Image (cartoon, rainbow, N blue to C red; front, side, top):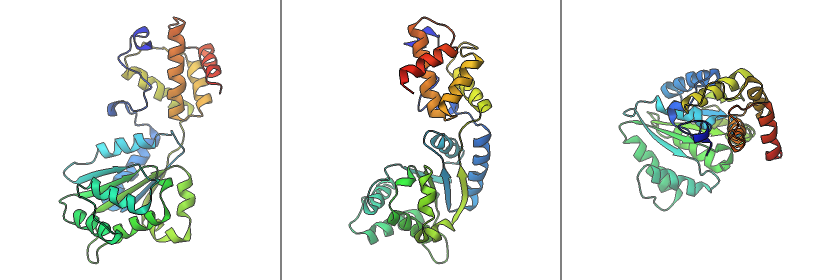
Length: 262
């Protein structure tokens, strides 16, 4: 295992690292400022970006900042299901046994949220896979109540196609209620360097384990996508350890990429 070879405490480029390993870069700082406004004022927020760009990490950082006595958090990622099943999943997440019939399910959700002592934050990952009717149901939930808005906040988080979905006329009313829109982009070269250095420090890796040319090459091959950086950098560590190398250089990266057939 390369941990021992490089005297690390853990895999620096793990897919789901400890929360304190997450680096708050410029992209995240701007996004978190907008989500902070959403938590105070908004009903819907939209977070978009290509796969692996860091959307889930952003949401982990954001939800950690929320006072637990003010928000009850519900995370849903199984979105490629029919609207009725989706509502049943929300009901179950709220601690209730789902009833029969869509009208009863909607009433269960509104009653449970309305009687809660805290606001409910519903985070929906993979939102680009939601059925059109499910999006309509979510808008109806937020709209519930005549005199007082239901204490429900929804974050729709998904890949770029969700932007096309929301352009449909049927979703105009929902779009008008989105108070915060965030498009998370890939890392710049400087951000990629900082990202790799931060992860290596968290794992207790030796200084200058990756030389600057190697990091630049990883950034180029990965296109600045953190998940791809993780995959390539981990491959480089495995490759270097197998050859008893102590430094990752350009040759190591190129050999690793050849193994990936990229």
